[in-house]
Length: 340
Image (tube, rainbow, N blue to C red; front, top):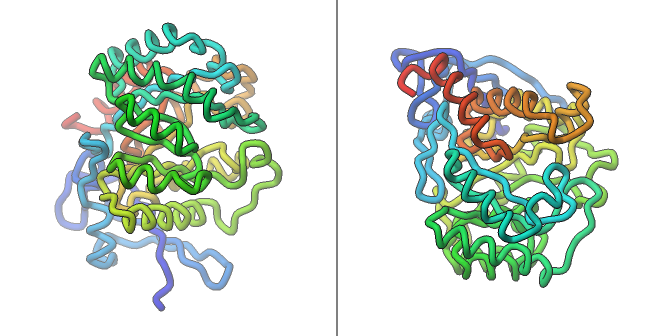
């Protein structure tokens, strides 16, 4: 068997032409890829020109991507606005536990430019305690129903099949599962039978224990392999690539060293053929890197991390601060992506 090659496009060239390819159909371009291979357990890195890629490798990196009926072009990421209907989420816990407040927040984020509103009823921050599915449904179902009634595209952030079913019945069109449909044995069948869109996130361990000495052979390669396997499970169940988005799960069972390596090599996930979602908004690694203890004070660091993700091809950014992120992207795009 030929050893697997992990390819990270070096996005610093353009426009497309001889020796230059367009990532994901356009917007960002590359002439080289950093190539990671393993000699046993030892990682070996090299630099390849695009002419040294196989046809399949080049096709996987250049094929246009979409998700949930939305065009996903590198350099012009879509925004997913976060609404947590919880008392204990790490950043906005308690802010939108009231249904009316959550609905108003979701509508405001949609007006500010969010293409999808992600509604969650159970905190999965490190150390968070689970809630009953009945309580989770009571929290999210009225919010999902109201937002979709206003024509908003809604994602439900849950790992529980009963909650997925209730939210889909209320109008949600995306399931965002931090366990990539592994927590609940019925989750995959719910998604497959509904024919809905799904976001598959990588998480090592469980929220209660995931930050207790996480270990990887190579963080980016291991996350890549896990998401590849979960993608294949979904494809086998009947989902299409345009119904799947993958998320490396920054902060979920990862040290700061792991998080930063994955962010540096985020382009490596582009070869999996699905839109890449990145959630870095207000995350604790930003607080440790920049010495900002309070989550709500991490907007500057969140914008920096979001732009770093956009520069590496992320097609969807999951954020708390839609208006501010949209402004930062507009300036970055004007400088970096001429046709934006």
